[in-house]
Length: 313
Ligand SMILES: Cc1cc2nc3c(=O)[nH]c(=O)nc-3n(C[C@H](O)[C@H](O)[C@H](O)COP(=O)(O)OP(=O)(O)OC[C@H]3O[C@@H](n4cnc5c(N)ncnc54)[C@H](O)[C@@H]3O)c2cc1C
Image (cartoon, rainbow, N blue to C red; front, side):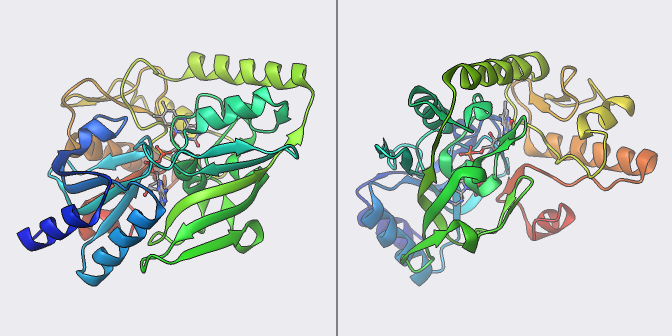
């Protein structure tokens, strides 16, 4: 990034901005080299201004929430990485049980507040890390519930910094996938809450928490499930377990002994270590089961050849 552009970015925001900021500090995997520039825009007008500047000067932009479903390139990431997790935090639940939230609010906060107000339908998402924005982009889900179920409307900003409201029926959601334009940043959402039975809500919440603790290697750094589950009865974790891959290591990255669809970072794993394990898992599952595993995690800042290899282009 040219010095002139660095200065313009710095001069155009009231938010917090860093140059050459290690993304390992901003992802749950703890992996990722320096982002040329990382910013927490101060507010909507600040973000609009930054987007317009990037559009005008051809600066590549990347969006992250809390980086809990992301593998960032250890060699560094070109362009401007934008996260709303610290500044887009407005949240309220109306008398009519509508949840009106900015996308930087943590999903856990929204779920806990919904439970407190007796709203049902979100409680199984307790324990899914990340922001509301990241959850909607990924259509995060757990134990039979998906975040998109109660969505009413979402607000995005286009590359040109223009605000656009999208009603739920203008969007498509499927398993861990949504039709949001990847060039647009999600800034806010409205969900229609429905009153439920407090005892049932609490029971479902406790069950989800217990299942998560029993099945996931939560004491280690990871990005959650690496692959989506394939169509069919056998979950990816079981296929990888049956292939005997649990405990396989590359550097400090390891296919978790507790949940075979998780790769954990023992401390100094690099994105190359993780990609090596991913290739091994994909190849072995294809050889044994004739199934093409599809990545659930998102790759950030890799060359086109790698993005293409993993179906991200
Ligand atoms: C221990 C662990 C357990 C997990 N369990 C689950 C689970 O049970 N179910 C599940 O579904 N997921 C799970 N995940 C994955 C992850 O928590 C979810 O995908 C989460 O919703 C991602 O939110 P985030 O804010 O961290 O998004 P990020 O990981 O930062 O980003 C995810 C994607 O969304 C995009 N994005 C993020 N914010 C915005 C925005 N404001 N505008 C536009 N694009 C944006 C990014 O570009 C990226 O493509 C787990 C992860 C971990 C580490």
